[in-house]
Image (cartoon, rainbow, N blue to C red; front, side, top):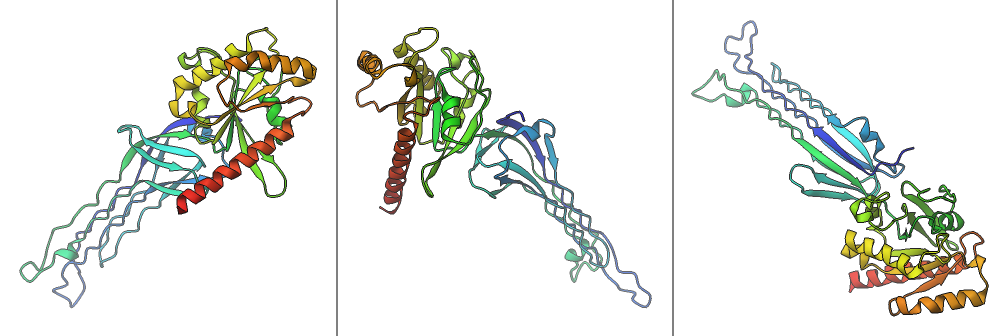
Length: 345
């Protein structure tokens, strides 16, 4: 299924029904008086999150959503039936923005979260409301009001604890398939990952975290090169970034330069994302001896930031992957505890 993480839709709430102009007409009751009922309220439009959805692709085929109108009032003081609401299902992690004003309406980041996005019109009043001692036969009614119409921009940001970064063919997808049950496409050519993938990493009983892999970045991504940086938004909710680095790139490119490419593109996209905790993970250590690995890391030490956290793994053989996932789990648990202490502080 195609992955779609942006969509624009129009929502139209129902108009309220008009109030009724009616007089009671029955045999032997010469002064029946007004008996026009009220109109029904128009239906509203709601968004509700569905945890089983992971894309906005449905909105490529249907873009306009309408709630039904309220029925008009009737004689005998009968009120019109209210219009039915329309409920639109969206994935958890959907951000709702008013396209015309730019207003950030809501961040729907919990399952079964319901949001009113277009309120139905109010039903009008029938003439029964306007009877008085000096106006026994009022001909006044109030029409129903129009329902709200809004154009909404929906943006999906996946919910994950950890995000993977790296150049194409760095081994991100192989690592994801190694540590989780996700099965992203893996091949020996660039851009095999065309859209974000999620995987759940289990680290012992009742200990797990969600990891997100996005398409590889290349230099100039911020200007639209390669697949661009459109999927970087999916890393905004993460709490830790793992920068996967190929220790022995097939094009013999400089590793320090490759690291800087990713960091520069990250900084161009978002200072906040650039400032998030980021660990370097050197991949493909199964292709070298321990002495060669030590020498390689020593050569790069001067180019790395002080106190940079470094891990070495082989996504193919699994070497070092267990130690990395346990370290990630411990880090996430410690940040959770710190957040709880701060909240109760």
